[in-house]
Length: 352
Image 1: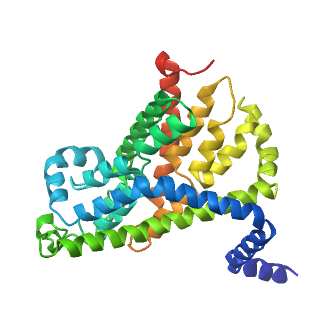
Image 2: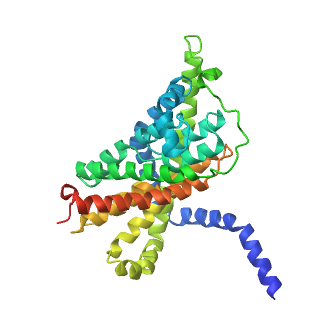
Image 3: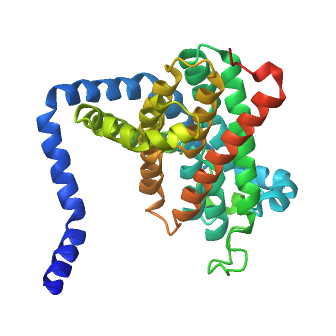
């Protein structure tokens, strides 16, 4: 009997994803009306927000990868990057572009660095842990102005988001410091890379290649946005989110946090835009709770972003572990910094 039960357990493990995907397909049919609306909303979100804000940056970073700019970043910022993050100066390009552009530009650049042997495997994994961040356009514009209707809240969230990612980078400077990289002969000068030879003869080809690569990445992101919009719709319609709220309500009451936040947090764990939108719309006298929870979700990024990063890093030998650990830490740091700012600086206290 025990052997038979073990056999069923093994079979279930082997077919877990097959059963999960089958359940997802069934739910798509069962809740087709709501899912169609969710898919349209996700597609609209992607077309009106994600593409305009990210696609130009994708093309720009692809073009810059064909120039000597990374080499100059390396020479200029090596004295800062090496002691702080234990990464050669070229990593500053991933750090700065990750902050300016937003998810998942930092992860894409780190993966490109690995493919082009600009940084070692260990350095690229350190980059993964802290360079894949939400951009100022999304934090200040979308979250601060559109969701919270307050620019100062957006500025506060961006400051704490930036401080959190730097803190994670400093901690992860010790990631695999004792391991020896197999690839010891990295490019000492990025100018020696044949891809940096840009002239009028190959300019059109380079622009076309950059656009083509950027389209591939932006379509991938669009697919994730639509997919997770449908998943969240299924969880809401099926009553699963209500069940989650009932299960975690005692724990939240113990922490003196209204259980009305549970659905927003759970949704944010899956996809940050929908989760933060839900949290920002919750009426609460202590607005600081809404802001601190938003800071955590911004730092963590959500499962949707994680899968996007995984789809990018899977084409390299980089481990996803430092990214997962780093984002969890960044979420905790961001929420802690936000709490301190709100309580220590009256200008950032929005409680009634």
